[in-house]
Image (cartoon, rainbow, N blue to C red; front, side, top):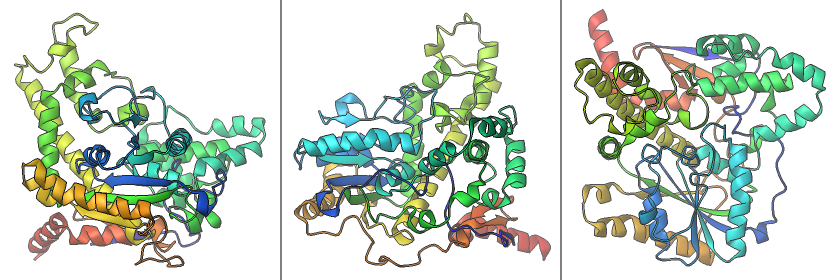
Length: 462
């Protein structure tokens, strides 16, 4: 039922080589005794991370929130990216929210370089930084001292400008997304195994790495980087990790309701105002889920509408759509947005499980399922806020395990094997879906959808 593709000749021991991940160089870290205490609120989209962060400010003095969501750092699309409105911030200072130009690429290294001084400033003023976000690679950039961009920078310093110019010619920006992946497989088949064929952003980044350094991406992840990437050991801050979670069916239901509310709040107007039929969806704010999904609808809508060409009346979009084809495309786009957001929820939860189990992060798991079922604020406070306040109090008093290996995965535990991280599984019954590593493959096999498809295939064959 599945094909196994593995790199037998070369198996670099490191996960996911991309711009925002592990490498062998980093800024100097503070001594253990001088590390400031930081609270990190993690979880899948829709789990209530931002709400919890604001609620914590009612129990601890000097709370300041540092946004760690890769789309919320950009200016624009406030509804689509679900930024906390000013009136819901309750006077709690929020940093790195709507501060980056939407057209630029903001990497994990950029986030680290922006966030570290902010966090340190809050600590110097006696405050409590609370990092909030669903972009786990951003948080890893704060916790783990290894980033690939640092290694790339070192390599560039050792490469002559003429060599760089020649190598950069190999990176043709006019390539379509499919041909980029094929070119990567030719250049570095080992690295290609670690990227999903549809992850066009990382495919492009791998090619850029090769063009600017002349080094195969798969070879950048060996030695110390392979041993230390993604682990909380030697963190620059003393972190208390709060993982707000809920049952999948609860999160799915909430996400669907939230999309409907976003549509009512003007999501489509936001996307229409920034729409450019010639723009790419692999850089800046346009990567946000909810932009690409409306492309086909907006192409037809902007072609057929009888308004002037500068879209001055775009704020009236969706209020008077009578064309059946437009209605159908809009319904399909909304359904795709909901489906893609649900897939994001699953990816985020899988990643958090792996951080806890395989990389030794001591994540305090808070189950908010009952709070979602109950409509009263009291349930949220009892089931989510109170347990988190108790954990943070123990952390601040020095009576709780924080940054470092979790009890079930102490330092020296093998965690994820290097070979596993460079293996792809292709599931034929599920339309040749690509799974990366044995962990994802085992989880996929246990899924209801996979089991149903396998059963139908067996019945058909029988």
